[in-house]
Image 1 (cartoon, rainbow, N blue to C red):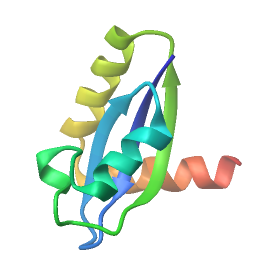
Image 2 (image 1 turned 180 degrees about the horizontal axis):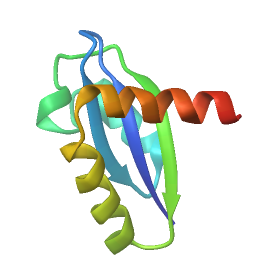
Image 3 (image 1 turned 60 degrees about the vertical axis):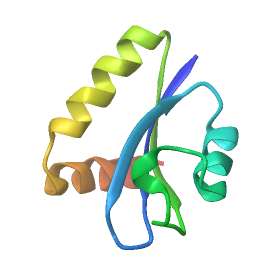
Length: 84
């Protein structure tokens, strides 16, 4: 199982990624060993997650989200919050 996720970074920016272990991946970001983009941009808040059955579908969805503008990403995050 793969997870597509969006992090809210300390400066207000958003980072989208994929992983098989969300807790370990966030720990990597916090330790500065995650993605180059997130180094020095903490603290991080996990804003959105979406499960996928395989790497292919997760990667396609990650790229789709990354192509969206900030407003669309924030709408996606808000939509996930209101549904729960």
